[in-house]
Image (cartoon, rainbow over the protein chains, first blue to last red):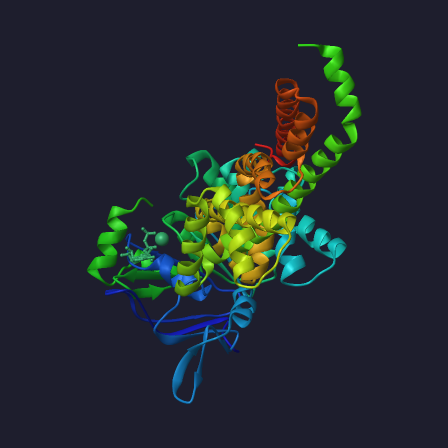
Length: 254
Length: 220
Ligand SMILES: Nc1ncnc2c1ncn2[C@@H]1O[C@H](COP(=O)(O)OP(=O)(O)OP(=O)(O)O)[C@@H](O)[C@H]1O
Ligand SMILES: [Mg+2]
């Protein structure tokens, strides 16, 4: 079966700073992969490359068999035109640490925007899909509220609905609970759990180790721009092979 | 001051004053509308254009904003005719005010766009929006809300600057008033009256601006 995500030899630097130094990662349909690792190890950068929010110098990223971002042309590597990039970005959905809801639109309009503009759906159809997902994340009663009228947890749930309503092949979550007050963390994690249980393929960056252990089919430990260790959660958390992972886990709360 | 004498003269001069006022309105309206439209494009190019475009427009906005409007008007009227572009005084005046308005609006749009967090563009991109769609649906609506008070202020500046067109012979409210004064010698009364009309017009513009601001404000 064609994997949903196949990353091969991915390299990325910011100027002279090498941030990703040869990432290989395969995600199959229905996989829930957690990315863990210390601050600065390149987790966010990896997600942003997959969502084409960053350029990368070497390697390939394939979504459902389609190489994204670049093509080979006469032996030269070329960035694809904006229009094609935009289409490929919509193949993955991204939930950000800071939610990034559009403040001038209601929750409903936030979710409808991509459906209308990218998917070219009519207003009625877009609204029906948006309402379905807002209901799913428990936000249907607040659909006419503006982001400024919602709590952080509520905003994040709307942001997740906005991404997932696009029916992406893969959902990317970048520390979606890190900027929330502790009492709001669980309501957002519950939404992610619910989507995972439903078979959504996802790649999750998280510092919530207990959550990663519960929800993942695979855990990937990143260290200094590489994947240092990966495996099922029981193996990664129960029997870390490398000292770095053992050290990282010892410093994290489980 | 003889009030009934003034009122009699005001009544007699009503048509020419009204025509002058009409011109003031027309000049201001055209300059603000064209200038704002152009200004949005300038702001867009200042924010996202390539280096050469940004440089040229930086010079354009800084030059226009740093030059007295009066000089701009004279330049549009006299200099352009030297290079073979013959504009009427009215057209030259409107052109000068339009350029003036575009440079101000361009600069405030640029500032407003720069103040929008990067996450907004990224969120729009991640749901597949192209740059044009992102600008139209996400960035511009936020930027326009933010510039509204400054923009209204620019509009009132344009109304005030429209008086300068009297110098190149455009019969707007000020020149119409001066013509009436030269017939009636009631300079104090008529200048006071014209001043009141300008104040009233700008007062109404500001009130309208506030009303729009309330209407489009985002509930918190
Ligand atoms: N736009 C940028 N310009 C320059 N350097 C950057 C940029 N973004 C990230 N970096 C650097 O890349 C490295 C990896 O950053 P990244 O945000 O991917 O780490 P992370 O694993 O997500 O960390 P955290 O757990 O703190 O979120 C860091 O050293 C960071 O300073
Ligand atoms: Mg990060």
